[in-house]
Structures are given as C-alpha cells and as structure tokens.
Image 1 (spheres, rainbow, N blue to C red):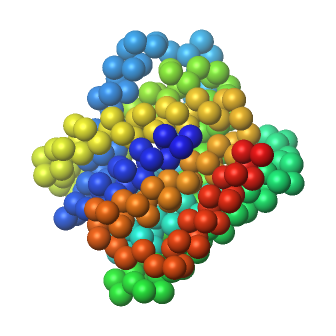
Image 2 (spheres, rainbow, N blue to C red; image 1 turned 180 degrees about the vertical axis):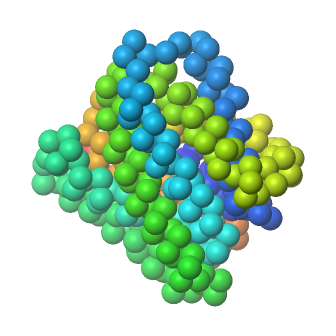
Length: 270
C-alpha cells in the first residue's frame, strides 16, 4: 500500500503540473483504457463478474474524477489533494462497520483517526497560506471526496464478490475510461486534451493502473478502512513531491502533520 500511495501521489502531482489540470486528468482517465485492455486480455473475465457493483462504481467515479479536476483548476494542489484524501479514511471506517461489519481494534481505529488528522492538518496549513484557493475549489474537493469514498465502498464490495483482482480491476478502469470519454466529449475538446497531454495519456496510466491494482488486491485481503488509510499516506509523498518538484515551502506545521500521519501508520501496523 505504500507503493500504491507513492504511485497515486505521483500521478496526481503530474496532473497538477500541467497547464490545464482538468484536461490532463481527462487524458489520464481515458488513457487508462490501454494498459487495462492488455491486463484483461491476459487475465480474462472473473468467474463471477459483479456487474451491478461495477456499474455503480463507475457511475460514482465519473463525478469524482470530474470534481477532482475542477478542484485542481480552482485551487492549489496542496489544498485540494488533502481535502479529498483526508476525508476518505474516516468516512470509510465508519461506513465499513455497517456495510462490512469490520470493527477495528482501538489502536488501529486511532491510527485511522491520526492519518486523517495529519492530512487535515496539511490541508489547513496549505489553506492558511494559499492565495489562489477559492471557496468554489474547496466545494469541488469536498464533493469529490464524498464521491470517492462512496466509490471506494462499492468498489470493495465488487472486488470481494469477484475475488479476482487481476480481472476485476481492468474492468473498472476500462469502464471508467469509456464513461469519462462519453461524459467529456461534448463538454471539452477531447482530442485536443489527449493530444496536448500525450505523455499522460501514454505513460500516466502505467502509474495509475499499478496503484489501483495494488489497492484492489489489498481490499480483498484486509479491512478496507486500514487499506484506504495506508493508501492516504500518499500525502507524505505529496509533501515531498510538492517540495522537490513543485517548489512548495515545507514549514513546521507540515512537518508536524507528517509526524502525525506517520504515527497513524505505526498504530495501524501494530
């Protein structure tokens, strides 16, 4: 999951560095079809294909994707990313009690809270010093977080029903690519977005596909709240990417946030 987190933070940062982050996000989402077609051709369909959960997950992922791109367009990567990622672990931890019957032991539950708290602190610190973020951007990020958490819950149900991550994951990615293309074809200049972001279209999906496959494999073997919390440690990598590549300043508050997230990881691992 730490590898998945690093890959996830990397493609998000790559999207944000593009002149048009929304177009870049579209290119990445549509481009994800090509490596997953190869994976699906090699693995074949699952023995039990949960088409209902697949359809619902794709239905939720399209608005999450669109809202994330809008959040990046309206505000700083360092603000939008923590808002989206920080709300997920807590929301999923609470929902998983009722949906999956997964009740976490006290130390692990505290670890989930610590990861979310550290990420929230990163977002607050970035918001405090940001001059470009807008209330509209924060709204987009919050709505994206809600859609993302809902999609993660249905995705887990589908992955566990299929019990075949190598087949299930490509079906979701291909479905998402088709849905994004259909949604955007009349809203944006899709060929232009793919052409102007050809590097993301061709190479970005390698990062996103590897990250997603690791996630799907993990939720079939561990409580989803713990898996998602560990994946949200992508914020630690996002801080490093922001400092080294995006030239964002790392102050005392960020270091404190990193320490809180890291403490949460240790509690989850206990």
